[in-house]
Amino acid sequence: MAENRHPFVPLHPFYPGRSPEDGARSFFETMRSRRSVRFFSDRPVSRETIEWVVRAAGTAPSGANKQPWRFVCVSDPDLKRRIRVAAEAEEREFYKRRANDEWLADLAPLQTGPEKEFLEIAPWLIVVFKLARTDDGAQVYYVNESVGLACGLLLAAIHHAGLVALTHTPSPMGFLSKVLERPEHERPFLLIPVGHPAPDCVVPDIQRKPLDEIMIVISSFRAP
Ligand code: IYR
Image (tube, rainbow, N blue to C red; front, side, top):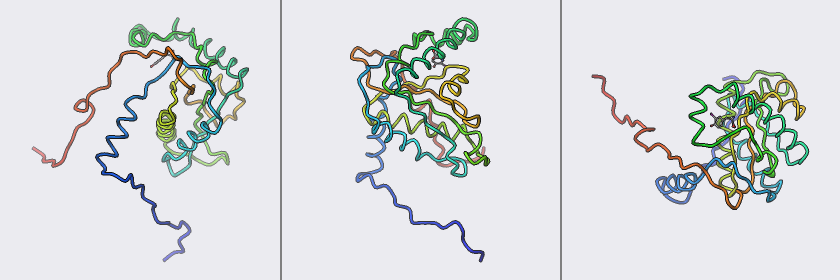
């Protein structure tokens, strides 16, 4: 047998200390109160908190374990202002020209618009970049899937910390590379303001699809 250059180590399983049913339900109960928030407080959030949620994001699975992500965490007020100014310029184009009528109608219940005050008010902006190559120039795989998974874990970690966030997608996002002076192989993926909600924060009254609309169970499949 060839020498094993890729050793395996024992798995350390996670034991929730209760049944899978209880563990799964409790996680659902925690996650069901997560909402996208557009009204932030300027109350500070510690750098340590941001480090923990980014560590959690970094546990995501990724194609061939390339971990093709970078989380640029901005609390500098001047940089946040410059990001806001550039984002709003793109958003004005979006709402005036780029979005078609159906898209604008779909956004109406969310009451969004080109004003992005939250980009300055939220204490942190986490700008997620996907890597088109590794920092060493090597190939990466399933990058959108990998970075999407990392962002899902990031949002769950932010919620679990008692904080709120918004997955903001100014389009196009090229300005983020410029303002943040990121190298060419890093491509902007999501802009996530993070903080505490404003005391009078409201969210749209929207519902999640019930289980029978999102799940199909096949326990014993027989072809007709
Ligand atoms: N990026 C714009 C528009 C927008 C698009 C979708 I799809 C949304 O779910 C929400 C907003 C903005 O942030 O306003």
